[in-house]
Amino acid sequence: MKKPIVAGNWKMYKTPSEGHDFVQKILNLVLEIEKTHVIFCPPFPALFNMVESMPSSFSVGAQNCHWEKEGAYTGEVSTAMLSDCGVEYVIVGHSERRHVFGEPDEWINRKVLAVKEARLIPILCVGETLEEREDGLTKDVLIRQLTNGLKGVDSLSGLVLAYEPVWAIGTGKTATPEQAVEAHQMVRKYLMELYPHQEAEAVSVLYGGSVKPANAAELINSEGVDGFLIGGASLNVESFTSIIKQVEQES
Ligand code: PEP
Image (cartoon, rainbow, N blue to C red; front, side):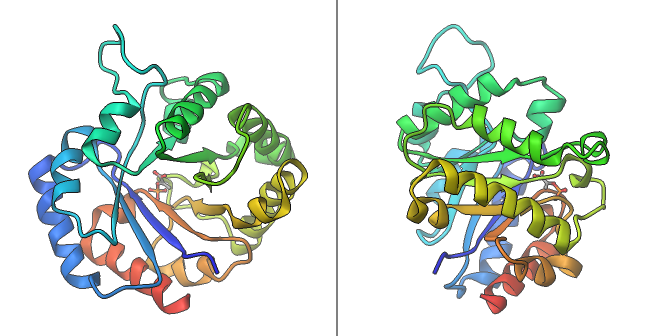
């Protein structure tokens, strides 16, 4: 059985010291969990110290990276730098990177390949905008983002996917369990067609988009949802802890 994942994407919130205090509070409340894998994804400056003080059963992830090993790329961070910090996961293709910073599928694919090559685990995000959903294009968008994002990826092992409908991120609007199940089925079916069944079944597909304590239990019990990528609710001790505990209890 897959261990459910609860990953907190802090975006550009919390200084390193605020992040340290925050994580200590969470750990005190959830240290005994066994069936859930918790990943903290703070901004870059907090990564090194956070890994140092993180118990081994919890993980730290970065929110982005560059695909080149090194070079004149002002403001960018390589996978080797992240790896040296002890980071294990890297979020790639988050909707804010795609839509706010204009990252095309081709860059996202290069990042996925670079993260895998560095033996880190990409959390590849895919998801449609509201307009695309209303135009009946959800499946087309997911398939396009998966096809382009996974180009050259021979094996799904060491990879996590996240279905994050853009219209649900940071908006308070959550996909209904039915919408989440339907999209997760599209993703899984596509993977089954491209990769060996065992691999396609084993890959974790997270749901992200306004997950909160009030909807966590229902969503985690939705078929095909293997965990969550959480933005807003991961910034608050009570809400993040409550979600982790609910996932643990439902697993
Ligand atoms: C996210 O940032 O990946 C996310 C899902 O944000 P939120 O939970 O705030 O919608």
